[in-house]
Image (tube, rainbow, N blue to C red; front, side, top):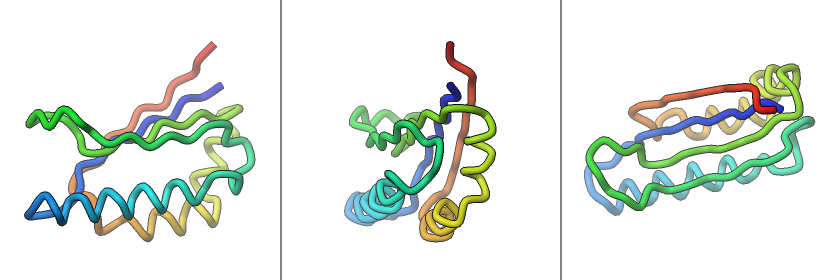
Length: 100
């Protein structure tokens, strides 16, 4: 199994603007459920700590194999979501790793 974790900071000059950006990001990624072969689990988390070095949002996902994760990268539904959220983020961090 491959775990794919992505964290973002989103645009917004006010808390309300950030909240709207986070909600859009959540909706976009949640729309992928059941549409990506090999995607076993998808979870979106919103930071509640509000500490200055925390990211705003995390995507936690599990794929059945590296091949499934690779295919996700070019899947039309994923490309659609990437396009929808591209202007919402100001920073992005990613970790992929193999789990036993």
